[in-house]
Image 1 (cartoon, helix red, strand yellow):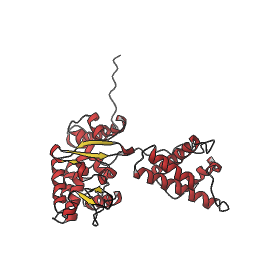
Image 2: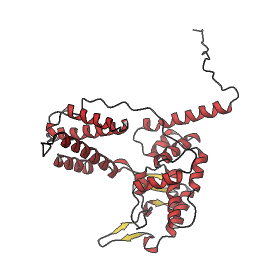
Image 3: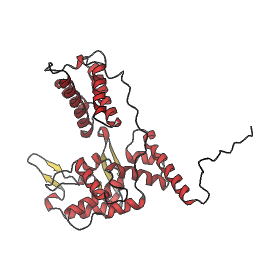
Image 4: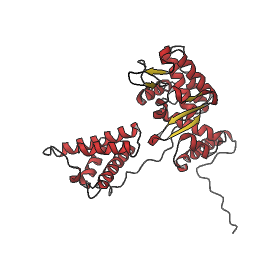
Length: 318
């Protein structure tokens, strides 16, 4: 199975142009399934993907459920196996896809958390001081909220991707798709303040022996590119001071879109800025905005109360 997984990862990289994050998730999911199968079949030293049956995958999903894995995580791991076996079918390595007949677990319907505009403004102010770390963290938070970038897109920004005079930044998104989005003046100023205090050798490029590598905007203490996990920890540390508790970088992306919608931006423009392939993905923010409007209305309007036993007025007219 090792060889099949490696071949699948090469396919994702070269033909599907999958992001590093996507490839890491696929590899992790498939390796976990491989380990489960080896533990269940101790006598088998080399696992052949063609011998895997639907019942084995069901047993694996039940095992994940007993471990109290989230339904979203189980659904993703099943999807990884489906994609893996579709690839093997295409290559003629297997006849049937053992994951195809298994129904995806039902997902809880919940809307993502969104910061209020006041909380978002407060979060931007939490990094204080003129140290390199504080300036970096301030620039990082401002950029996430100003652009709606995914965390993987944020860490991929290089200095050459910034078009500060125009208020634009170049992002590399899912499937290696690229787009240019607006970035606010406050975020640009925060980035400039952060970059200005870095050593001069970091001002534009980091020299290597064979080529001049682009300099990442957001760096760790050793001058390397920040990881997505590091960004998540930074956001969690500062947002933990908010009344509602800590949030993820994706919460800032949700907040970016919802606040734009609140101020009258159209869905098509928000879709372009978020890099959504489908407008239906962007439309979830209309539900967020509606829920917020109802909450404000119920709280503020003197006649908004709806008693639990109230009867709907029926129109008898034809």
